[in-house]
Image 1 (tube, one colour):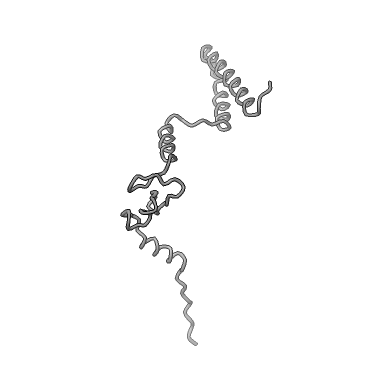
Image 2: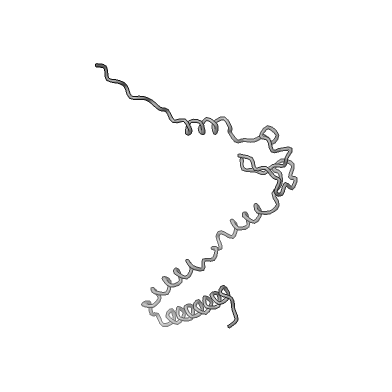
Length: 132
């Protein structure tokens, strides 16, 4: 059929879905429930291989697309592109606002440093010696 593997799989998938839809409508009209139980399992297995995003996540996808756009400095809204600096607070900043005192950073550096030092240096306590 002169198709690439992806296009061929898509055509086969559409044909199988059309067959399943036709047979499910037939079963619904006839009132038969024996083959209806088998078809949802087939549909679920096909959806695992060729999953499409659910409609409820379309809002999340729009948010991701907005975040993937050109990054801007959170303070002055200047486009930073590849030269932007990501702060520990999670925002991007330009060269002049990259330091925490320049953009009123809310990240607690002191407690983060304390936790890192505590994790890197565990308390070592020797066993007490028995007196003879």
